[in-house]
Image (tube, rainbow, N blue to C red):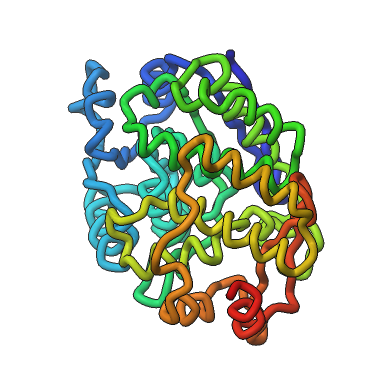
Length: 355
């Protein structure tokens, strides 16, 4: 199933191309059409790049990727290496890898020479359905995740679902957390479809997987089109896409981005906390909460962590970038398929409600 999605923002229009078995073909095409490219490649997928006959003639950097890649020091180091390749403003940065590489590459592309074009080849399920779409990028600090970054849309996104065959089950499940998130916040029909098809997605059935990726991107595009830069005063704010991320990001920061939790696992736990909070505050019916919990249990998505209500977690949440005037802008749900941004919560109320 080949699909093309057009995402048109105020200053940019680009296509998101979903095409199985296409990565080599599309790499060859962009090399043919552009003579000024710098490739940033996750070491785990460098074997793909080496399938190009002329790969040694290209300018490229092979990078060891983990969440710890997204730091000021790595940003500076990699930027210097790119500048030493004698680039100019017509150079395009091409990122081949998962979400961490895409986030850092986007931040570099938006700032180096005050902005060069970016092309993304996301190679993990999480990056294909979420982080490569919509233009958010950033790096982490000791204070929290993605607290330094920009909104900078790519010029092209190429998605090859077949490449996911190389991922571990844990990585697939991590990406699936973002897929189910889209159903919970926006589309109960999609949620119900996932109930029927989750096993096929997690075992990488090509047709069903491609459809799940497509449906997820369509939902995310809807929010990006309404609110490209996350205006928290907008009722349709793309901040809705952060459902589960307030606690999820805090957990990742608490564990210092180590292998204890993947991003998707942290968001999975964060979604359950947000759903429970929605129920206890009187917004979410009990049967909807149970439907969400049952889906997570059925698909082995993590639902809790023994540190999730640690006082240090709440301290991290205080620094969340969505907060405004000491109020926690927290994404809650009224029912499956309907989320909203609550701006009347503070930490004391959240703690009291969750106890």
